[in-house]
Amino acid sequence: MLRDSRQVLALLACAGILIAIIAQLNHALAPLAVTVSAPGLLIAFAALRLPTRTGLALVLFSGLWLDAAATTPFGRQAALLGIAFGFLHNTARRLPREETLIGVVSALFVNLGLFVLLAVIDLGSLPDSSAGALRLLADLIVSQVFTTLAGPWFLSLQNGMLILAGAPPPNRARHPV
Amino acid sequence: MPRFDQARPFLTLGLVLLVWLVLPTAVKRVTRLGFYELQSPVDIAASYARDLQDFWSQKTRSKNELIEAARDLARLNASYELRLQDDARLRTEIARLEELLRLPSYGDFRAEPARVVRRDFSVWWQRLVIRKGANHGLTVGAPAIYSGGLVGRVSEVHANTAVVELISSPGLRLAAVFDGDDRPVSFQGGVNAPLRPAEALLEYVPLDVFATAASPRRLVTSGLGGVYPPGLYVGEVFTLEASTDGLFKTGRAVLDPRLGRLTEVTVLVPLDPAP
Image 1: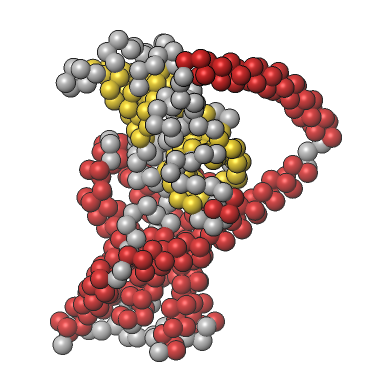
Image 2: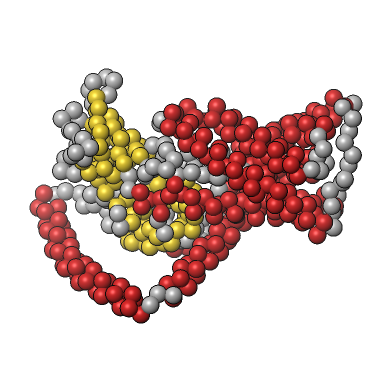
């Protein structure tokens, strides 16, 4: 239990750092009208490396952190991240989950999935859907580039933070399919 | 058993969501405020770091540059002094006409300048977080302006920060008028396409109003509703076309690109807020 709490707190600190960096990046990119978001990075490590309860708690807290600064109903992003966590956590059994490349590729797929889901849910509510789709596509491209570049560093930061907190993730062998 | 293992994350999530749904709204509100105030110091610290960075970069300027800047500022101050005198004369004139015609007077505002902590421009919303909040007397709904005109209105107020929803945000609507025309039109923030200035949508434009790329029309606030003072610059209209019902025109207003680079805004706090 104590180990789980330490893992969640250490990884929440990492999530806070990433969210702060992305916020500053978006501040700088605002004149170009593009936005970076990397929900996949908040999920990848938790879904691939942590047990269900710890990973889900971390993902939900990270989602609430994002929700607090958004105009969407509080809890919506947390729920979406939770669902994405569920899918990735189930897929993780068949993947070499300790590899950085797998973590980054998973984050890219989660980003893509969440962008498509948000487009399906919310695009109709915008006053100009076609312009909204174009903007969303541009945001997706920028976000995927950011995830690819920052992914290895962030996964390594999370791993390092857990070792520093004295609660490294279990190093499990791949389950047979 | 493997099948149960696969369903376990979703079952746990379902349970959490169920608990979340039955939680009282007050608890959710307090949780949201808690998470917001938790990350607020990070944003404020980053904005102070940016200010410090600006300060040190200004320190590298030569004395000649500073002398030139001071000379330009002195000229600006002189022109503003003249405008202030004119402003006082116009205010007296307005007050006299209001009394003569028994017109209701426009609400008065107190100007509260605030630094921009963070720009948050997504496809769904465009907002600015500013470094002043409830502790400085800011109220929800107060208009925010800058040297180029209207920025938007305060949508959330926290202890030391406030959120300003920009006029380019799809969720913001207001009544605007064309410069030199007193008929109101509906203005709604649009979707900001990448690498282009923000745009807004116009509806209910009278049929006898024309705007082309060669002769664009300025759009200003109407003052209707009492939220925004009248005459604040909103945007420029280059195209208008007949709406599908043929009764009005619709169009797009191009907003000032400086809206995306704002570092400071002034919030107009109503001196006599509506009850």
